[in-house]
Amino acid sequence: MEPTAPLPPLRDVIARHGLSASKALGQNFLFDGQLLARIAAIPGDLNDAEVLEVGPGPGGLTRALLAAGARVTAIERDARCIPALEELSAAFPGRLRLIEGDALAVDAPTLFTGRPHIVANLPYNVGTALLVGWLSGAWQPWWQSLTLMFQKEVAERIVAAPGSSAYGRLAVLAQWRSTARIAMPVHRSAFTPPPKVMSAVVAIAPTAAPEGVEVATLERLTAAAFGQRRKMLRQSLKAMPGALAALDTVGIDATRRAETLTVADFVAAARAIRA
Ligand code: SAM
Image 1: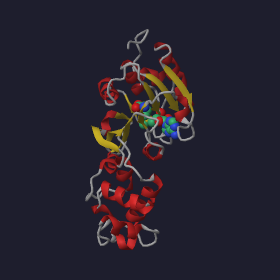
Image 2: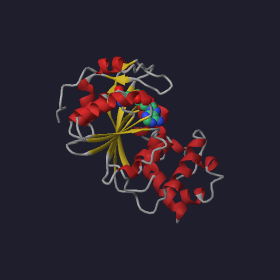
Image 3: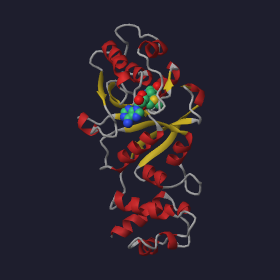
Image 4: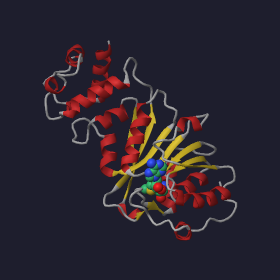
């Protein structure tokens, strides 16, 4: 979709609205239109699709989402960004809804009737807290897909396979009823100002949830197992009622360590705990 008038360069928008990057708000902005268009393409065809963007900042990614035809709802905490985003809203009439607030406090599902795609480039602590919330809710989730920028190390923890040092609670939570992949590495120099570390965009799509497994049980199990990841499961799960019996039921050797169990192993053990 085209704007009603040509958009000014993002750097001009930032200068005009005095949007110096705030370290406290984790602001590292993206300006490269081609890179932003590639990120906006990750969820698939967005023509007339609902998108929730968290942390639009001066609106670079927002522009790319609107250009891809999305109807965007954007939650931004920094009041300084709102006038700049209002200009963008005026250039795409009826396509951009702005919400000023902390995404951790906004009840986002109530903003939508359908299932939005979620797209965000956030400070990693906010992004991780939101991700855990989005992955822990009822299934199928209220969202259709997640396209999220993280620092590379966090992205690797989300998509990690068993046996790697990155594999842990976050990998199991992200993979037991979703697919998670690194869709695009992003060099630190793509950001203004550049952060200290490399980044990557993670793409997550929900799948069918395995039957008979409570997310709360799975979370308790992985918290206990990975809480003492160097220990054998018979030690790390000792204090969790029913856990060792469940391992026995599903044929998992309690002398193994947490990081050797597949996601399916954790799911099977969590199901047996509940049974
Ligand atoms: N999306 C823009 C881009 O890609 O250039 C800005 C990305 S910048 C890394 C992160 C943005 O998230 C900032 O605009 C910041 O103000 C905003 N932000 C930080 N914490 C937030 C929160 N809790 N809720 C909503 N927005 C937040």
